[in-house]
Amino acid sequence: MANGTFNVALGREVEFHNRVDNSDPTNAVLVMVVLASSGLEIDATLKDYDTLSALLAASNNEVTNGGYARIILDDTDIVAYTVDDTDDEIRLPLGDQTFSTILVGDSWRKLLICYDSDSTGGTDANIVPVKYFDVLSTVTGQAIVPNGGDIIFSFPDGYHVAT
Picture 1 (spheres, rainbow, N blue to C red):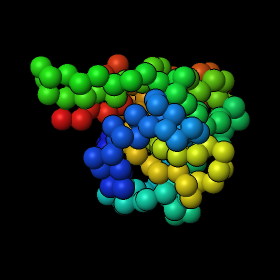
Picture 2 (picture 1 turned 90 degrees about the vertical axis):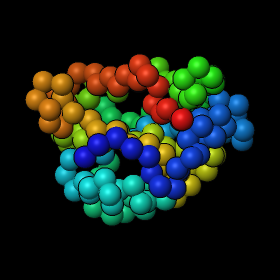
Picture 3 (picture 1 turned 30 degrees about the vertical axis):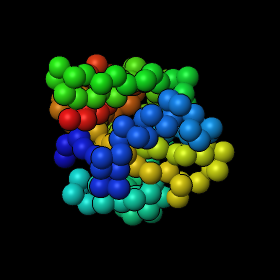
């Protein structure tokens, strides 16, 4: 298991970020989804899904812990990227994201960042999975086991670096 980009989004990460930042289209958002350890497919299989609905229709399970809800990020939640001509790269910035007061239940194993071109459309079939990240305890190196506290994800170097 590792971090990576879904095949359907390869080379499009900057485009999706820019679309949300510029509200183009108007209701474009990034969606953060957490997958449980139970039923999780290996990365080589996971990255082949083209929609969130297809991914969840397989053996992968979105967590169901009390207090959990997907985080929706619109143009007010993200900032524009900058082009770094010195290091020849683009970093997609993202502030800390907090899932608040998550109760005991599923063990958390993968964080997904997805793109939805129309958040008013309302179906997972329209959501494109973009990035996936391992969710591991810094103490045990295993999946995170919620205990009623907050779970915070930090992206100090951005959530994607395009080179």
